[in-house]
Image (cartoon, rainbow, N blue to C red; front, top):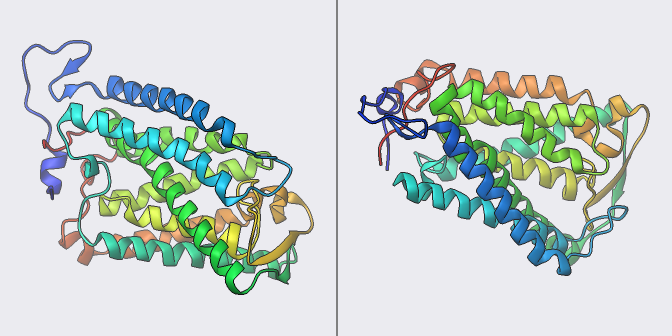
Length: 322
């Protein structure tokens, strides 16, 4: 169902009987977010207990695709179920929270393209500066194809999971109570902390993850959907882990096309964190954000009316009825 920016930004009508739990727009955003977060947490604990006997992960060794899929599914399913439950309660379609809108396939493919270009630029810069050494190709033929497809599917799942968890229902709901950008900043913090459990993660890497969260929110701000962010997220991770064989937020994939090793101070090379842990990523993210603003912020794009949150930057706003 397509919604116009005016309907999204317009305040809800005043209704009698408001209480601490319910306001003019239904369940208050703070409570809705808390319920969603509790549902995700409890369902993840349940799924985690179910898959734990089948997981064989040695954090000192590269993670195998089979284990990575089990681990990611134990997060994807809870996020999907929790979102579906909240959508049912709010009488909205499941895809309402970031997966509707126009040109979905084009935006997804565009995100994939720019995600791979971005990580390639990061690797090239680190290589030219002497902080990353590519050791050559280590996979070929059927093995390269098999691992490439396996990791491609896995990182697509990662993209859907993390975008839906932090920039799907949570972002849409907090926007009702705090405004779009306050919500984006608040959610960037737990998104960064989520990666702190990775063994090789660093402070610079965590800050970069938080900054990437804001970049993804920028695409949501302009397009109203998460399709570009999902594509960019998946391709960025796939480029790191499979194609170039670098660490990805401290995690190393089993089966990658090229091999590499970091050289020099971790602040510049990224060290065990991978390219995301290098200070070089900061200006790269600023350039990406600048290009997004120049492209999506141009008058021709505004003329199509595709910026649904335009009146909800720093103040609350009402989401459209179902």
